[in-house]
Length: 145
Image (cartoon, rainbow, N blue to C red; front, side, top):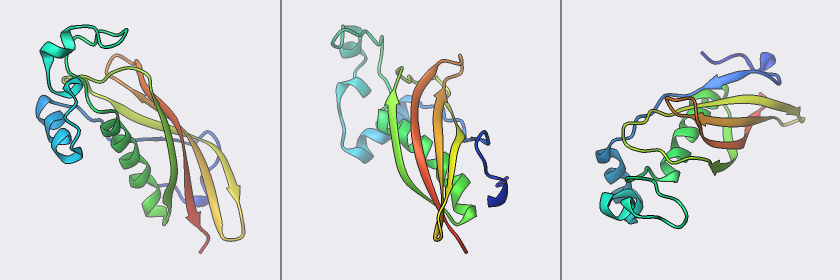
């Protein structure tokens, strides 16, 4: 449920829809994004060391995680008449087929201007083990009616 703009203040928590990637959804994202990096497709490639990291199997695209976060933000702000204006993220851990990730955010600041309310949110995405897989910061603009 969306809260009225008058009660949006620092500390307000929002959460998004959980997402569980599968091999098929990862493959679909490869085709949609035209990113066929073996990180996302080839288990044999991923059994070796990738740089200094061994992921032990294919991983979901970071931009798929970005999309899960964007969905949370738009599901929350569009009913208020708002728009996502900025999203910055850092990937902290890989997401693999069989994981379930849950995006969440906390309002960290609200700035009112004559034309809009600007809402800053801290982003945290965790997997089913409670491990942080992505963090970031977002800004939403809600025009004053």
